[in-house]
Length: 102
Length: 175
Image (tube, rainbow over all chains, first blue to last red):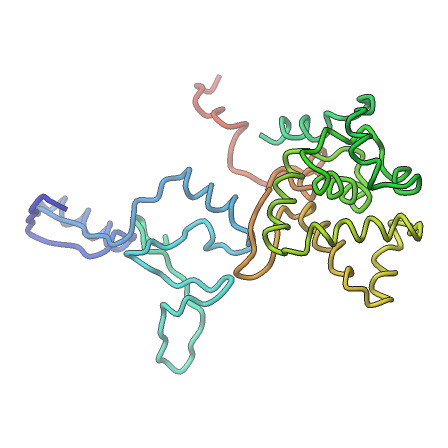
């Protein structure tokens, strides 16, 4: 990114929480910058990823991770991205993209 | 859209047999296997291996018409996944020829004899039915709405959708 940006408040992550927080702050008059690691998902690419996936029952198939913003993938194999150290590890899924998992 | 593809899949019904196709397959089929295949299915296959695959596919899935373009894509994917695939297809076709095996009994016969060809009918039929070739990390999706599992039920199955109509129907103002 070539432009140098500045704002009163920088929100990390363009999921629903980041988006709502940024909206409220902006309505109060603050200048707000949202940083998001993942891409903006285009509907056509989401549909194409679903159609091209051999695993139609994998609800994450339409949202393949970006190389620069990986997220957990378990089908067909665990990509090892998420390390769970807690007492009850489970295959948590989330999407790194504009809009987040929501 | 699905209806267009369906037309493409079933477009061969009732066509007269293609003489070049007959010549191409003549070396591969005996009267028995030829009797299992409706000749109307065939569009000219680019070479004998693909012709054998289309013939064997027609016997296995029991369809009168199979889309030639999809047959080529499935054949290429299956042949890439397994280097023996073309030879196996020829061997199975020859086996059916020689022993006059009823297609409905074929899998049972192969399984019962622990034939090395036993996985072949399943891989071909799942490729046609699911549009998926291979499994696990090697799985590839070759077809979706033209896979037979979608085509066979397309006349009755209405997949749930939030769309109010066909693609683009939302651009018009409500009346």
